[in-house]
Length: 247
Image (cartoon, rainbow, N blue to C red; front, side, top):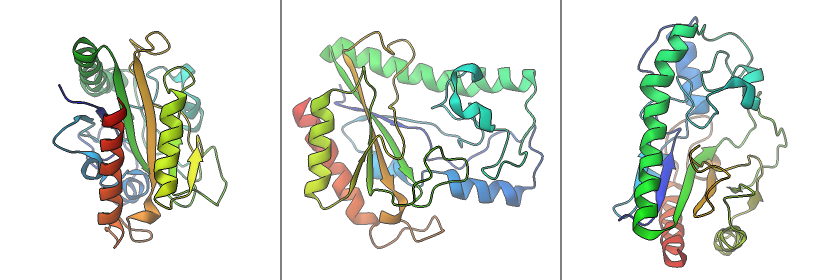
């Protein structure tokens, strides 16, 4: 059995179905550039852990959002499970009830079922499970960001009050600080992914969010790898190895 479960939800730039979009492709491309967690699949993936990667862009379907808009805080900004606005607030897509049902059935729930299945297997094999929620974030806050503070850390460690053990937070913080990185705890983003079946119900399922500031590995304003890319990849793999050792 693989040791960790790596949840990688935002690394893809693919929009598999263009139904409903009301902006030209050039606008979509600009939004994809801004919102994609570039290369997080490559930075976190390895030959030991089990990875669950969403093969479609978050601006098509964001698998980290709640499926019901009344439970999702970002839905009031048009950025719930199915984004309808750009980061600027301008209209991006019209989502009918039929389109919503199709995307949730054919993309959202299929992804979540894969994650749930991986967690089930892990629990059967080890009686415990650690999910690493793998992300990156822009150095400059997006217009719709809930946290607009400009001085952002190098690494954000996101937690859940039920599913993130204190010692995981402590050793994660120490690891990255020892490497010379500045750390945010639940800043600028909070929470960590847990499948609905286990959420707030099964404390054998642990989860921690690791987000990398894109200034560490991308050239400013682009999706081109910078000179820091290889270094951050090595650091992330060392971090995952450390987690395996304590789990």
